[in-house]
Image (cartoon, rainbow, N blue to C red):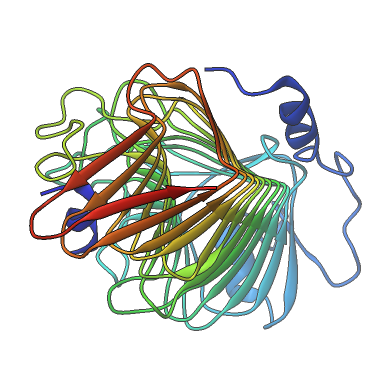
Length: 367
């Protein structure tokens, strides 16, 4: 069974990189606290959690430069502002406490809280294993909460030792089955995760992902961005280095019997546009129906884009290098794909791949 159904139950371009990475820089390195802000650390608030507990709903918390080795749980509307990504860091403690959802997360939002976080880092690794104490997420958004994350970094979300744990070590995890969460994530860096970079789960969850850098790693199988039954938008993100790695039983190129990993995995109700995807096993993996446009997809191990089980349109996407161009996969329903001015060049395998599980058929048309 491929990885999509299992989960449901390379250098970047210099100019684009300089623009995106430049947008991650903080506006100033150490702004003075604003009136009414709670300052961490201070005599009254030595930890981030102490300030969160004391703050009034709608309050503001300023994090001075430093490392805060703690878990943080937020149940109310708040704004947390650091001194800059890499300067104010919430770091996983040695022993993680499991949340109400059964996950060990570094920062958790719930209770319909609307939380703004900017100019700070959330970092692992965790000290658990797949068998006990595994790190579930860097930032966890559930219970109808909303996260607004910008000019931030979520990194090293993995266990010690690094291991492929199912649904473990996702950098930012939004929503659940059942459950809901939402997020706006922009101008941020998501790197060195064990499972996936950003995951949005369930029909009641949604996210807008804009101008982020999402980078996997070369030692274990990862996915970059996943929308699973959720809605939203992925635009102008740079997503790289998400592929099958050893050891990963069943990982491989067969859509019907093996796992595949992708830079962006998305379903009906998600807009995927103007992203740059480099060195992933699949650049984009769409299922159920998806429109993509103006994406640049480079050096994918298997195919630049794979569309499975539905109706799809690709407009002005560019696929260059790597194994193949566009795959149309009919596993459970007929699949139709329309390619509108799609450029495919310098691939070593099939420009168009057709994968059918009879009696279902796949068809690709180009114009």
